Length: 357
Image (cartoon, rainbow, N blue to C red):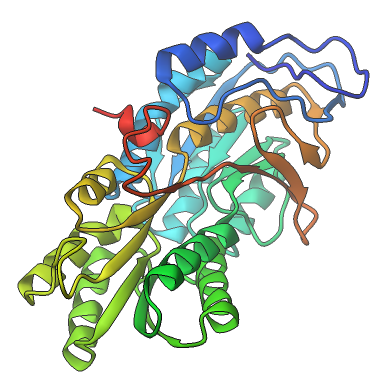
């Protein structure tokens, strides 16, 4: 399935609603629907050929889930995807992986960049070979990509800030940050910091730069808690890598109190993995922002198919509850929905984290 259902009169696009409905019924997707983006066809391409899929890492349950979704979504979207390649958290290895895929003769690439600046070298190689690229989860600083499939990461930081701010009148809160070489780490960190400063000035933000590394998060959190045993809240920017070490560190210090208990430390996360949902149900953490692993895989495949057929897109709303925006770099980004999950909606069957066994 690769056609679009445009609103501005183009013809010849394939209708996708039936296939999408079947996909939604089978996989209970959180963000379903055909793409009504204002798309146009730049050339008459068949959209055929192998597609390389480059992962950033596989040590996180989030990326493990995305990896599991890739072949399912490739099949539903009519994409001939090669076996995924894991770059093992190494930006230079990711460039090598891209070059290796290009040397295998792929006609399209779906890449989840590790480093927003470093990935440009790989994008330049693909452009020289005339191979379209779709970026998933992280937007490159520059370079040519057909689309970035991503949620609004600024909203992640703001949602975490608003939740903690409403629970904690004053005191110290910690944000365990991601890699600031990634636009995701920068967006979440800056948004959380700015929101607290503007809306909750009685909160003091302490920061842990953890680079998406679980060991780093655990070690630095342990040190920080020794010096600041009066912490009242924690914002983890990636539950997939920070959940287990954070809970273990709190437990080892006798600070893991469940919601409602005296001394409970409010914890907000990002990812929406099943382990976070279980922790919410147990009262160990309080909320998470559900980053749509299923929709990342689905629309990554959708857009690479469209790009291989020569289709282009314009900013504006889609019919899968998202909006395509133009970034300052000029790159287009489809910002997919990423809801806040708390004890009130943690059992919602539409959340992808509740469909993973």
